[in-house]
Image (cartoon, rainbow, N blue to C red; front, side, top):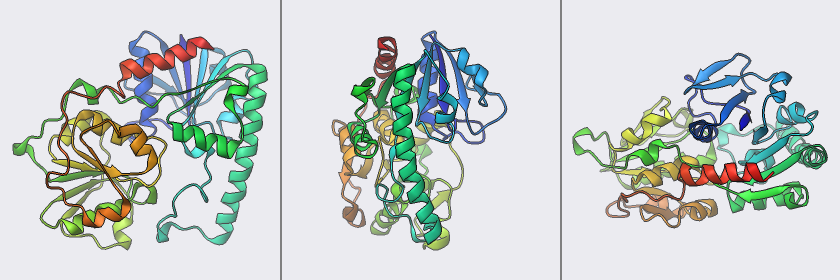
Length: 353
């Protein structure tokens, strides 16, 4: 197949985390012999990343593919780009924010990230209009194209039905298929190396987004002063909050391909979340085999309840966590998020349209 992938952002050398779960599946499509081109709406110039061609948007690209895959469709770019498309297979992947209300669905932002009243009102109005426009667009698309819907979790499908008030099965095929892990996390397995140890605990998180709960990592560090914590990520969290002496912040991006080897230098990954549609990085860490502590948010349990190396903690428990013997590494590799399984499910779904 010729597959054109639409994404609001996409990994680059300067920003390797940007929707990396989209890139992971594109790599697998290409491995299986399909032609893949990517539209990054946040870029205007063509570039190559991991041997994949990434373009700024142009209407001419829409004539090329056998199927168009729209990840997290937004009204700013995806709706505008696809409005005139006819007689194509179009698959919409729903990952989260595109069908969620910033105020009402997401946890409260950290105090220094709160918007003023006028901006808060604007966001609420925008989100309301976003839902209405997206619902109408999806219904109109079903009249002009063969469309399908993929949700990355059962929870994500429930949020879609609640906010969009549209049953996708009325206008197209739908299926729940989680994001696959990048193959790097299955090609090898976790092996802690005492000689290369950097610290006891690793966290890879944006610092300032309350849904990623860096404040809970701080609580865990305060309760375990004998343990060393490394947090990889950028943000101003510690400009507004005191940093415990046993936390070191590494203010840089880590390429996805480099994360498995990095994990070997730590005993445990602490990856809390207050809100997520899947939590791809946590799934990748769990698959790799490192012991992982995360919150008992319903998506985390849905995704990871069969992983023996994952411990679920309530938010209130982080201030009491003791990491000694809390979870053990699981080598041998749980295959739940294997690209070999999930990418073939996606391609099978594409062929059903």
